[in-house]
Amino acid sequence: MKKLTALFLAGAMTFSLAACGGSGDGAKDTTAAPAQTEAQGEDTTTAAAGTEAAGTEASASGEAGVVYGIYKAGDQTWFIDEGAAAQAAIEAKGDEFIFVDAKMSPEEYLKAIDNAIANKAKGIVTCIPDQTMSQAVVDKCKEANIPIVAADDALQTDAGDKIAPWVGINAYVIGQANGDWLAAYAKDNNLVTDEECGLLIMTMDTVSSCVPRAEGEYDNFTAACPEFDTARIFKADYDGTTDKGNTAATAVITAHPEIKKWLVTGANEEGTIGAVRALETAGLDKDACVVGLGAYMAKDEWNDKGADGTCMKASAYFSADSVGAGSVEVLYDIIAGNEPAMETAVDAVVVTPETYKEVMGKAAE
Image: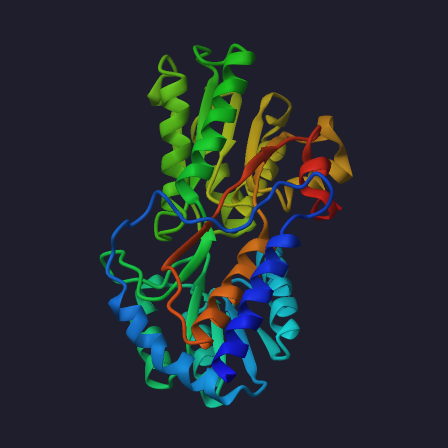
């Protein structure tokens, strides 16, 4: 009977999340959908073995507990919003949520994992700062019988196989959307064959969830604009922060003074905002077009400066709420003794200064 009750509550929560998944009137439905672009048919045995015992034990107890949200960069807007959504979903279950900022530090992250284990956490949702630590983290949690769910960046083997359930964005598809939008902009503004125009893609090559974003951007832009000289396509690698994004973009911009009209997109919103600031400093923002990824900082540009006051012209919007609440939904599915899908992905829609308020709803404020 207790197991049936737990399953009923999990189902009720799923219905509630689906009903409230939008961000307001006119918001796009970002209810998590199965990923179609990554690791089809991969082995899920390891993850199932690592969570089955924990789920059975937690389900049997039925007691309120503590769930940890351990995020690699807890001071970034995305993770703040994601954590808030996770907290609301967890507290709705009657449990306590502890938000931890790992400060992009592997040492801080492992300390937080150890603290969660020492405090007998009911479960952990997490974005790891260094994916090479994945196996060690999953092994720690398995030994302690604590279920863990990855959000945004997967917990995976060196070969890229997921070893714990993952919830995040549909990376390649979202990159494709940005590439398509930039290609249309280039065509509309006669930039495809303009020798003063260059494309800059901000990349994070050491983060598995970010690599497909840049690949989708490049693939669809070049497919739609085959006449665009690939010698005028540049990449700048950074660590996901605005400061490092600014530094990386500045280096490329400075190294190519022949480019006067920059098209820019990237792996996350912070990196593209860093590029916006770099273009402003170089005095090249008036003829530039930057497309963000997340829209949670683009909306601030538009709210503060208006459509004509920034070179951030568009951004792929996807909901941090969907990832935050979705990761919790998967975690409680494990706690209830079920075996969830290994991958749950959220799609996006490209928004502009003309459409962001309608699409994003309250998230645009």
